[in-house]
Image 1 (cartoon, rainbow, N blue to C red):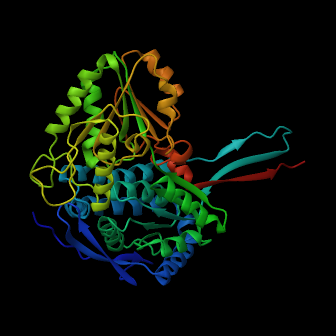
Image 2 (image 1 turned 90 degrees about the vertical axis):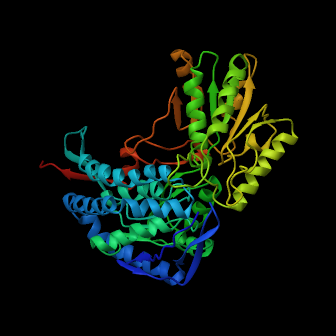
Image 3 (image 1 turned 30 degrees about the horizontal axis):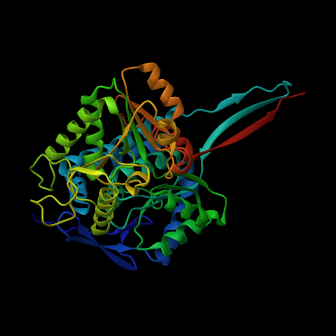
Amino acid sequence: MTTATFAKKMYIAGELTDGQGTVDVLNPANDQLVASVPTAGIDDADRALAAARDAFPMWSRTSIAERQMWMHKLRDAVIANEDHLRDCMHHEMGKPWGNTQEDFDSLKNSLEFYADEIARIHDTAVADRAGTHTHRLVHEPAGVALAFLAWNFPLLNLAFKIGPAMAAGCPIIIRPSEQTPISAYAVGELCAQTGLPPGVVQILCTDGYDVADHLSASPVPALITLIGSTKTGQHIMRTGATSIKKYSMELGGNAPVLIFPDADLDVAADIVCGVKFNNAGQICVSPNRVFVHQDVLEEFTAQAVAKAQNAGVGWDKTADILTGPVIDGRAWARLKGLIDGAAAGGAQVLAGGDRPGDLPDGHFLAPTVLGNVTEDMDVYRQETFGPIVSIIPFDDDTDLDRMANDCDEGGLTAYIFTRDLALAEDWAARLRYGEVQINGVKYDIDLPHGGIGQSGIGHDCSTLALHDYLVIKRITRALPA
């Protein structure tokens, strides 16, 4: 199992450039060096901020047709470089080759969707009660956008930001995670190749908080957008409070799953385990707390255990792999601690629980199923962000409403499995989550994605995301007397 190496640079002010530092990127499948990529210092950040500020008057006034042209050029370059972009992700986070397809498709689809969607945004008229004036509501670009990305979906997360920003007319500075910057830097190369006007898109990585905080604290960004933890969102809002800004943030979650006695258990097990073991469970919408009615507990548990034991684990590009490594040794130790702590508190480790025996290297955790998980356990209270299915039995006397909504991380996603549609709709109304998935799961670029409360502000995907990058101006004209 060998690791390729990648030579990449930042993309600032229309140029590929080195930075004032470097960060080593290791493949978590084998801890081999993938790249030493440049990172930005304060001077690099200031150059990016100045380029974005200077680009805004031009880019915001560019016609929709011209913006669409640039987006289509970038999309075509992305399509032509599919294998390379997917290879970057395959190595920088040990993402199984099949898993990289979703990231790649998301970037292509975002550029296509928002190039079309911006043309559907129209001015609207407001009636004047006295009949003395006319009023129009006009959508305009919000200003410079600053995007902080999580590492778990390197291109998907970038896609959710670059599409609406370019379409809306907002220059965007993208800061990928220092753990997975390579594929984002590869997109910077494509921006340079297509001749995108300087400052419209910039991609730079920072190592630590100092430079990232400098970007947030600058008055240049009008919008800060983030995919990350609730804690990070709070920090960015504090540092960004030097000026009035818009925020669009997809933050943490601790998704409940409600499996009622009449549920289709085949479907429920497929979805819970599929989403939980895919990408090593490092998914913000991954099912975390699986509440299973006592009447079907034994059957569902048996199916979950079988799926955990049969899930393909590894990094072999030619094999059918579902579960790759977790991102690093610290994440592995945290997950192992959650499992061991639950077991010490009385939970049953029914599958997995440790490193797969045939994978001595890298940060692999076998798909794990825990039974009899209780509210006092850390694995219940925390967003696990790993391939762990935590099963919590319930019966008709359980205060399920309280337990399902008791989520310190806030409400991002919830799942319901029942054939009783009235029951499903009743629970969909009770659950305080931004997304409720009933008897299935569906995500796409045209469907809004966002949380409630501590899980975020605004949306990714759909026309709602585009509106996060727009502001409304009222234009009023007096009619002749």
